[in-house]
Length: 134
Image (cartoon, rainbow, N blue to C red):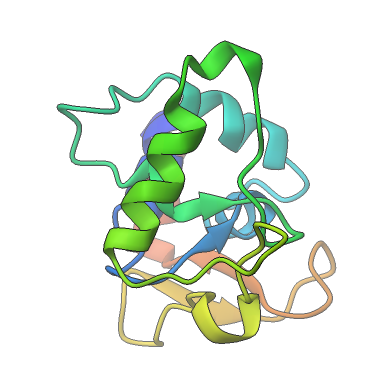
């Protein structure tokens, strides 16, 4: 499985009305400290025809990461999240306490403690990790 495909696999699991941070997605894809790589991967997603819910990934401050290169998709991202019931405060922030997603232990992604992420370290199941090495 390619690095970008590992990222997309994680992002596809984020449920309607929930968000994850770039760093969280990196940890879940077994790419600790590679949050920026997640941003690059999501930038490449077709915002219209893709099954990857790219709009559910935000920065660690609970904000949409603004970029002059996204050609209006920053506004689209907020609109899509609001359509899912995600509330932004007056400062444009989302409460991670209320909306951040954590995979359950029965999903393809499991919760474990790791040195790379002292809180909720997350990684792909062993069977998925074996696929990544090929």
